[in-house]
Image 1 (cartoon, one colour):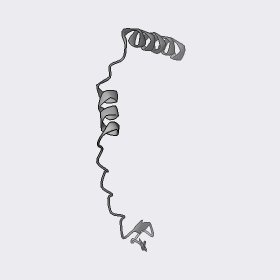
Image 2 (image 1 turned 45 degrees about the vertical axis):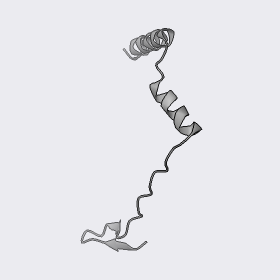
Image 3 (image 1 turned 60 degrees about the vertical axis):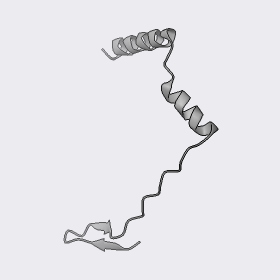
Amino acid sequence: MDREKNERGVEYMSTMKPIQATPELSGEDAEKLIRDVNRKPTKEALEWKKLLQRCLKELKE
């Protein structure tokens, strides 16, 4: 890639790499991704997270 300097002497790239397309998901990978996105934390996990947040907040004070 070519590098050029502007009037301040700062180098910048004159050409840019093309943006690559995102590959399509299908089959088992797509199903796993959808399951992970739609998954909700359990009540116990939420309570544990809140407890840890309170502890961290108290330690910071």
